[in-house]
Image (cartoon, rainbow, N blue to C red; front, side, top):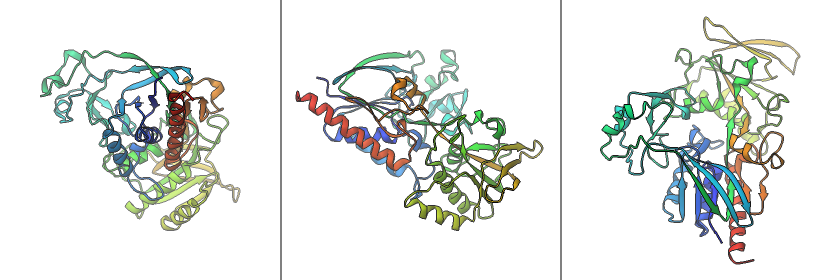
Length: 418
């Protein structure tokens, strides 16, 4: 009887599930499609409501996992099929070549020698890296990886020549693994809704219309602008910023449900923007402010400290002034019925939380209308975190722990013949 627990996804819920299960005495294999762990949390500038950096929690979890001999890890790996059941699942994993071997020390000499570049996907394309790059500052594993589409291939080989450890293998091939495991935890996470589909907001067309996750990367000290909020069009600090809520959510044409966390994210962002730029004019366009429970105090505090203008109304259109890059926001104020036209130098779309494309591999009968999966998919097969619904960091941690508890109970019972 295979007593290994496989966790698909290395975001905060998958990491929590892995560390809880492995410290309960079970073998855990974590499979992550990106080259390093941390998921969306690693891309954040600050958590809320404490407003502390994500490294505070991630580094502790990484240390606990690295110290446990029952933990194994596959990065740049994607679960493409799960079959079987009853304590003996068959899992197919596709391994993408990274062209860098395990003896990489992270010295960076390869990147210094590399002549090719790529858009930095971790920073949502706001800057560029070399074709061989370190995923991010907190990367675990701390190992360089090569973007096969950007690399010039064996005809170049400058990175391999520069590596003093022989860690570059430009002939590395993709592989497929066929694994058996006692239980599966599906923690595939979420993606920001594609705002390019919001044509009336100029998403993907107007450079100064960005998403809330792009703002997080700008504000992060290790981000593309070293913590400065700059307009992508001219790299200038904006004198006015608008936050547009429900960009792609609560909309029958896009995501029908509320993402639940976007209002709090925008309030958090308004707080740190105000702290850095005391004179910047801030406004938020909203349908409803979703700040339930003790977050009501957080909302009230941000509103008082920042002086942000709150406008109840969902903008119908955003237009760009091509000469200045400024943005005209057209909206009907629902409190007085007046149509307003306001100009801002930067607009931040609170993009809805969409399920990871990996969730599309789960049968439609186990997914809701927006594509999120059920917490219990089958005996021994459980889902956690934002794979099940939009949620913030704290409930994602609780969800990961709950999935681990289910998995260890199931594997434990099966292992003892119960």
